[in-house]
Image (cartoon, rainbow, N blue to C red; front, side):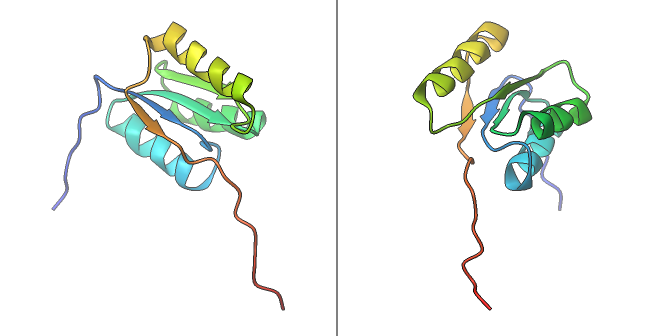
Length: 101
């Protein structure tokens, strides 16, 4: 059974959107019609993801979430582009390999 979701009236902010779960979340929300505010610390990879989604309803903002001023700018840009954010997927982070051989 496939469940269909409609997010066409929602603005979704996703941090860590350039790879991994964040990228997958961006793809799924875009497919469900959401307007996206994507952010990541890696601007080149972020732009690749945003361009790959092929939608005018995608805003890409480079952002280091450990810097409060950059986070404030992210949400200012979201407000300018889409009037705000309805859903925030706070996904930014780094996974380190803790297994030593």
